[in-house]
Length: 556
Image 1 (cartoon, helix red, strand yellow):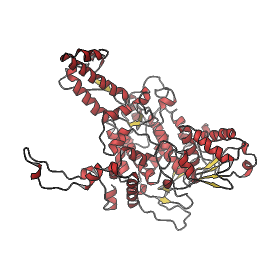
Image 2 (image 1 turned 90 degrees about the vertical axis):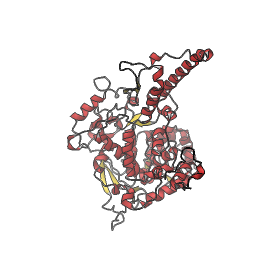
Image 3 (image 1 turned 180 degrees about the vertical axis):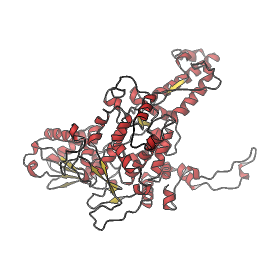
Image 4 (image 1 turned 180 degrees about the horizontal axis):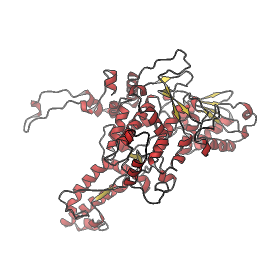
């Protein structure tokens, strides 16, 4: 889509390679004419040798070349007419309140993600490729402005960033984890099935589904919204990484769920264009597919270790059988503790918990258990099935992403580099934050309370560091380097009574300007207590004016 709308853009893609001739059987290779290799293939083969900074610079040049122009207003302090204002009600869309709604489709409608989809779904792709920077907005690029209903805040950058943060939180809010399984079930107490969700979809008249149709996710929904699922390792508490998410695996998905996946891709592209990192913890399997890197059983183990162990056990049974056939009694004795073949059914579980039958060639129709002669085919089919999960939603997501950013160039990046490019790093580096800090209003880096402040940040755990960054900047992930920060982190002195009676006040922040007003507390312990309370109890923005009269507040 970008190349169609913006003329010739040089991109690199594996499909552009020229097929190399192969010699006929028995013919020497020297008999073939010399054919130059495609430049794209050479670059892809050596992408691990290209510096990451060079790739990012190339990516930024492509973004600049495909940015839609914005006609400025005569008054530089007024937003252009092309930059429209989007109304968002976060008060009614907190994850905790959405979790209390039994219908997954009603949760979609009320969520910030659903509100954005309703507002932006009719916009052309070129509108999403704008990168307007308003006067006094701290350098924040944007394609729309945000009006938080019921929150007294002006959008100078903070609310715009907060929208993308809440969308990521909604998509990855694990209901089963947060409610210890209660919200993972229907109100009747039984497990929710695909047909339950389908009946909900038919009964619910959703505004986002034109023509009277609705969404159908085709699988169990363990998150607030039906696009992502916690990886099976999370549910089983196995493996090294429990915090990644996979896409819904079911086939035959509703066109409207595919539309939501495409919209998520567009939001990821918008965030990337505007220097934001969406806090999405996709599995490495997803990033490998996005960058054209092959996937294997090792990648399946990263999300579902139990399934890979099951396949390994079957392979050991085959080895035991082969050892017994060759008279290798010692080898067979080592495997005597393995389960029998009757322990394995001709089926496998998908990431959503659903069971899928595996059709092994030449297996009797009435056969329900795995037999040795079926094992190789069974293992292969399970691997292919599990490694191709979620491809329909991923294709839709990539289609949406391609409408906003040049996804063809992603093949230059490794999976980890692509993850960092689009979603940033999970860890919050305090030394990096300190490197971009500035001190204002009589505050000095040598002040005792400033030294306490940095010590406290170093002592915070990962979750608390994310809370702090959201508190001061409305972001949960940091840029990769000092040069990538669009503005410095300012530590300022408080004004008014907070400068006279510091222990009676909490620290305050201005997310639009990445600044923290830090009272000169009497001790490090007092500062720690005040700071932790502030970062843990600031879900809304009310620093400018107070408007607790909007829809949603009356229920609190």
